[in-house]
Image (tube, rainbow, N blue to C red; front, side, top):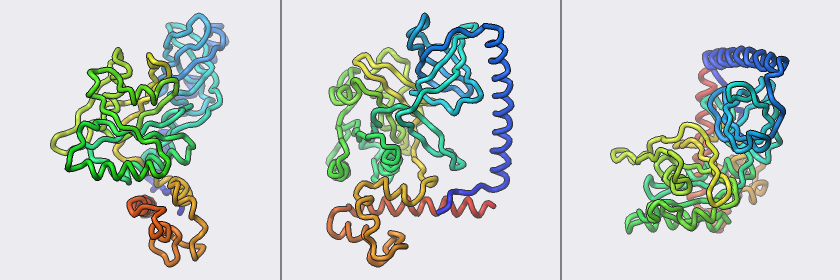
Length: 351
């Protein structure tokens, strides 16, 4: 499948935004160059991006006289997009500000697509992604699988964390346990906890997950990500959202990815809450790779051009029949492929 194409109006908007950004970057670069030539910038030193605000960053100094301080920095125009978790080289300037002059090598980067199909980096240098779900709002295979497909294609390990386990009832316990069992059988680390049961202190399960690691929390709004972070960082002013009683959907509470240092050791990156994780920018081959049990049978279909949508001799259907692939995961796989096709068809019609 081809990647999503944009209509002329969308292309014009994107071009205008790019031109405006380029103009701002040129003005900023000229100002930075003038400061450097005037000797107004200090020596180069290492730093860590802990938050991103449009054209500016919060950088924590890792050495020198500013070590441990957080400095609001501009970015030189010739540097690619920076995200929370990036290691950088920066120079202090006037008025308690600085300039980022280089980006270090990344071990990995977590990305998600924007509304136009372009990949937007969210966070970098992550040890593992903690995917938070809860009995309410009700978790579904398809939502979880979208995160897992994205993570599998970046090579970042995933932990599935069931929060609010105290909300398990006779009505929902069987379905939630069955869902978790499917992912445990695939080798995913599944952990259960309840942030509200420890009187504001971090649960032992969560503390063991984050200690000594850089963790990124993702998941549907309303599952309690901010509440968990509040227990890990009680001194931080983190807004805690509530689930709408009328819709059962979460209310967004985080506006930018931010890195926190944890008292028990390790770092935590909280990313913006998103209800759906679109994958239509990916190829069918990347979707196949994102399903661990499906990737094993690709290439074994009867026909080389098998679409894996009920075609005769499909190896995926054979895997379901023999029990190595659950019907729920196959349905989720089909839905993702269908969503991709529909999104791309809408993009083509807009030409």
